[in-house]
Image 1 (cartoon, rainbow over the protein chains, first blue to last red):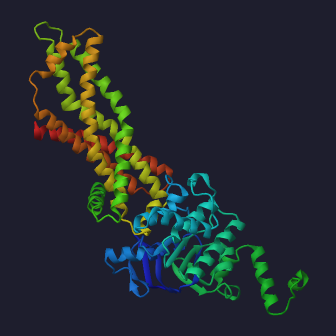
Image 2 (cartoon, each protein chain N blue to C red):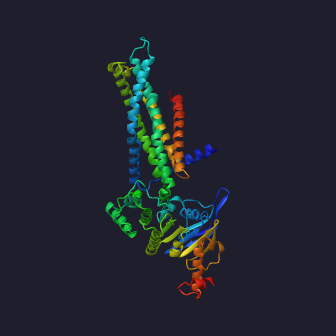
Image 3 (cartoon, one colour):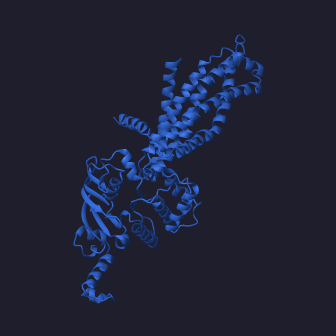
Length: 269
Length: 245
């Protein structure tokens, strides 16, 4: 479990995060959503330690990450896996070498054992047979899956995904979302996903934290989101006419005013 | 103010790169990789430049020494001392600042922009130790070696040019090489080589490691690192000459 308490972060005079507190439970997909510039990436970078918050506390299983010495931080970091927006694969290494890198760095396993583990995680992300390919030779969706494989190869307790679906088509996005959910549940990880992909929000948003102008604006689940009366959240989630209509239809459906045939005439009345 | 910011950050980077490696074997592998990248891959250009440097120095020295009062062995003495004291260490390192420096800055800049450095940080790896230290140590190992190669080939190039152009016979050239040889000059050349090796590896790592923005900024960082390295080499050249000679 990860808890953040009253996080503040600014760059010069500009305040990017203002007093955000939340808790992220294990075995669930926790989503941080918000418009571009709302501070969600900065918040995630603070949580993983790539940025130092100005004030506040970040607790990994009740251990304060900010007050830890460098050695203790390293230990926590070795329990963290992260999927980056651009996958962040090492260009000069093959898929196999990329996934094997954390094993080479932090374990004393034999090459055969490491190779077995690499094949296991590549199979988990449904990427068998690409071991010898370089990142430049595979598609964006495959790169993301290699990124996930590298993130989970050491069996981390915490998984962070920064915009896992950016640049992917809806179908591939869904595959990535389902993969994240599957891994989270199977390994009981504390997963935090930073996204503004609405399909992901609806698909895997067990817990959703909506950021607006650096503040926590709303908190809930994908089941609550449709009933939310928060204007900023509704403006963000249901930005298009199509999605607004879809939301209205769903509301009517849930209140029993509309059958599942989705009668448009009924809706317009 | 801007200068002090950069200088302070540069010193902190150098301080932070000294930490216990997470896995010695991988760090050793990275060091060997960098020795290959910096040393072996620069060998071709070093060989070509140093042979021609020696050849041109011989021809031009002979052109200037027109009086029959000065023995021809003096040409070899001048070529030898010029190459050992200045051309092999300084000129070769200026070339290496371009070849090696731009490669280091672009490599690290690209890693920074594509979040590969962040990925290493998240894994719990000290990126300064893993990415910067092997480059600097590799440069300190291979650059003096390249300078020695350049000096030997430069002197040999001078001999070949002297013979081919009929300026002086090889035996006269060889006799000149042994005249008034001061071993301290080799120590001086090596002092320069180590100083420049540190400059041409640490300055580009700084500019590459802290790059912000996109591909345009990587190019800028690369160019800036080469310019700053060249200026620092020339400043160090003067300082070392003033102190050590």
